[in-house]
Length: 188
Image: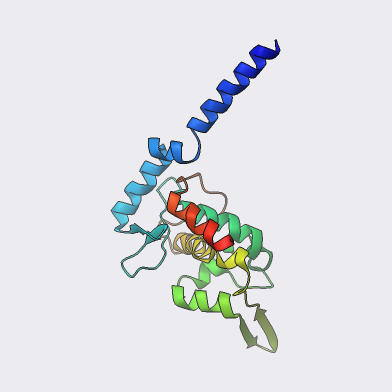
């Protein structure tokens, strides 16, 4: 019985390895094909481990059935790990901090980046609002472009431009080798 169990376990492990990670990406998952087709349709290119618009800024790719590129997926995870405590689930805001899905309707990438890195203080109606600086926090800075693409996808939905509705995306593209390498280098 032990021999059979070890043989079965080895076969299951071999199958799992062959359909995970890079092996799965090489075979091309349906989500990869859908997201990549949407990126092509949107005119965005995959450069430096993420999709970028014509200006070189990170940009989300969301299919009509809400499957997303790896950066949006990673941004969804990182946002809900670090940002939602103040800015609310799904970037919808709270009584404590603004709805970033609304803010990114008009805020450009450079302004967003600067605020996250350096922080911001604003006095409105006698109440001081403080966004702390996260420029030294690797858990934020290593994934800031991903967080941006997630929030941008939410802001596009709020504008009715085919972005991402509240909740978990319906699927995701596999992580690229470039994205794995960048994360490992940044996290050190």
